[in-house]
Length: 68
Image (cartoon, rainbow, N blue to C red):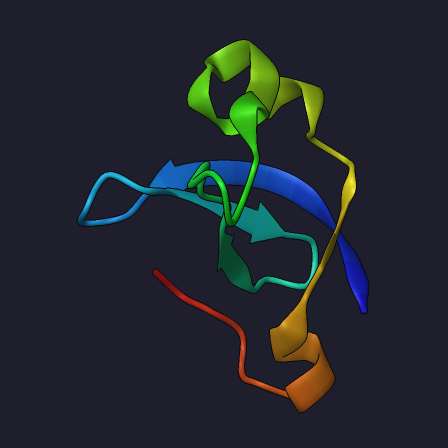
């Protein structure tokens, strides 16, 4: 299920985590060659994706909302 990106925060390992409109969190790492998300490496890039849909696996499985 696609959910809009509403914000970001860094986790304890300094990896970026997207905050979704469904109140779930999802890592958005730039980890080539497996995951190519150059946009996550800059503030301007992250801001350009606010409001964009991101597939939320947690919604698919009915997981509880994330809190921190």
